[in-house]
Each structure stands twice: as C-alpha cells, then as structure tokens.
Length: 493
Image (cartoon, rainbow, N blue to C red):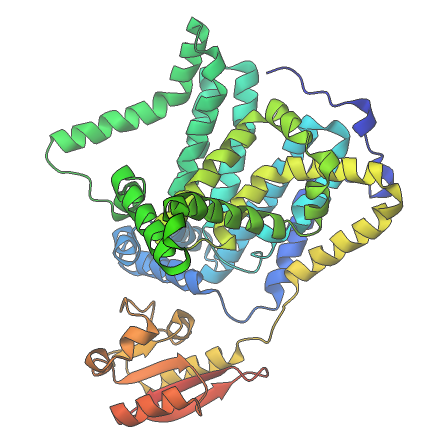
C-alpha cells in the first residue's frame, strides 16, 4: 500500500480547535472523561447488562462452565468474572471500567487511522469520534459491543500495517485481534473477508498467494480442528455459532425474503405490481439502514450529504480500503439480519459509523474549508451533541430499585415471579429471569397460572390491565413510580 499523502488544500490548522495534547492521546483521555460523566449518575444497568452480570456471578459461584448455561456466548461475562477474581472489583465496576477502556481505545485507534489518511486532521477526527451519536449514546451502558468495536478496529489498524509491510508476525497479530473481537460478537469474522478482498488484485503473483496464506492461517487451522471434531463424532454444539450459521443459510434467507415480499405485495400493492415486490422490499430495507446511518451521524450528516464531499468516497476506498470493504460487508450483514429477524436497531448499525469515522472527518474538513463562516457554529453544535450524548435524557428508574427492594423483602427465591424487566430481578438478587416469555405471552390464561407474582410496567388504571386482573382474580399489591410517572406494578393473588 503506498504512503497516503492527501492534497495540501485539505490540511486544516488545528490550533483553533485545541490544546496541546496529541490527537490520539486527547481522544483516549477525553473518551474516558465522557464515559465517567455518562455513568456517574446511573442507578440501574441496562437490560442486556443484567444477563452478562448474572452469567459472571454464576461463573464465580459455580465455575466458568456455569456461564454457558446462562448464555451461549459468555466470553464478556468470563472477562468480568476474571477481573473480579483477580482485582476484587465489584462486577458492575469492572464492567463499566472495561467498557470505558474499550471505548477509549476505539476512539484513539480511529483517530490514528484517520491521521494516516489525512495527517492534519487529528483534532477534527477527535470531534467526530467523540460526538457521533451512533455509538456515543451507549457510553452509559454495559454491552459486549464495546469489545467487538475495539478489537475489530485494532484488527483493521493492524491490517493496514500488514498490507504495507507483510510478515507472518503482523498477520498473526491481525488474526488474533479478529478472534478476540469474535469472542464478543461473531460478526467480527467479516474483517477476514474484508482483508481478503484487499488482496484480490495481488493473486496473480506468487507473493499475493503467500500473503493470502498468511492472513488465513488461523482460520484454516480452525477449520481443520472443526473437521477433526466432526470426524470424531462429537459434532459441534455451540448454539451461538449454529444460530449465526442458520442466518447465513441461503435457502432459508431466500425463503424469508420471498415471504416478506409476498406479504408486502398482498398488503400494499395492486396485482399489476406484484412482480416488483422483491425490488421494492430490497430497496426499502437498504434505504432504512442507510437512513439510520445518516440520522445517527448527527451533525456530521450535513458534510456527508454535501455534494462536494461525494468524491471523497474514492479517496476513502483508495487510502483506507480495509475499512471501506468492511463497511460494505457489514452493510450486507445488516441486510441479512434484517430479512431473517425482521428488525435492525441503532446498536447494530453503529459499527458502520465506527468504520466511517475517517470518511466523516474528511467530509467535515472539506465542508469547513468550503464554508469557513459556519465553522464556529458547526463546532458549537458538535460540542452540544457531544454533551447531550452523555447527559441523562429522562427520569431515573428509581421505581425499579424500589420494586426490587420490595420483591427481595416480601417474596421467596422459590416463588414463581414474572418480571417485565430483567433489571428488577437482578437488583432483587434473583439473577436473570429465564422464562423465555414475553409479557403478552405470560398474561395468557394458560401461562398466567404458572406465576404467583407479576412485576410489570403498567398504569394501574389501564382498562386492559383492570380487565386482566378481574379475569385472573389478581390484584395490585404495590405500585412504584418515578418522578416522570412511569409505574411498576407488583401483582399477586
């Protein structure tokens, strides 16, 4: 890969923007401070966090194997358990610490990657990486995506160095980073494919094939080991791996997509347009993901949509090809998931924004050069979004903690309780509910008799709730509300 030297006209004077810290260091330190602000006022963890923390508790109490009984891919939980065992930190503290460090590391790596393509853009890259809402909105949460983001970006940073200089050691480090990312989310394996795409032009030479072998040595070894296990008759029974492979099944994928198109045609199209249903659905799914990408870019959507920035796509492809290839592949992964599972959310889309940080920075530098009068206003807007990302946006869930205290005091661990939100069970010391039922399913007559208590978010005067209470001969034992009026009901006989 040639040395990346951007046109001189792109070089921005950073002295107006900041400070004396180098951009990479600034990104790391500022990210830690933002995470500290984000979690400093939290009184409850997120829904998914209760699963990870409960799996870690089980690993500490019963051994690492117990975590797999709670969750099929519990490597993040095992990391938390190991941190508690080694350092004595409370699990929640350890989780927030690791998430903050992973986030800060991701920010620093992205700034370094961006400076590689555009040397004088470091401080602008700091503004981008610290304020894009797509991933900064999760600073107060405990999610395994933090590890996935960090090790995936680290792998891409190593990929750029390996593509420049080659070598078995660099290839091994790159593959190790991808494996570590996959321990958080299996989608990280697309980085292998992204690097492989970058090598397609070199496969006409013997050296190109050697480099392809270098980057695929670890996956090939894994395939050999898997084949050996299968031949031994033990089979592969990892539920998470099996689920991921089922999503990629072409036959099942086409059936789901065809069913979606057929239902859309029957519900919304005249029969003369039924043949176009598949194209409409495909464009609709793609457009939805792209719209989420644009809207979650925050203020940087403006430079991105500015027509003068569009030629930068070619520069992004040329200078940071592994990131560009990974962006395209992950976009395809999101479409597959959208078809198979019928939804896609901002948490999943956010990885596209990590990959696009250099592009957003390039577009921003060009935008402020073309419209210098708006630079100060734009920076103020970005800083406002940065602060908004980490400040609480709603009332605290004090009613969750109050309901948890009531459950812990007035019920027994052996009581069958349905929890509308797993956090109440977690803070009541009852672990993570494993009923597998939605609230609607639990309230059905054939299921309701299984539970002695129901802990759910609802208004006590809701007509549907009142009718259900009457039918099931139950009553509201206690109710708890926060300052916004959100209510948790404790329902029993």
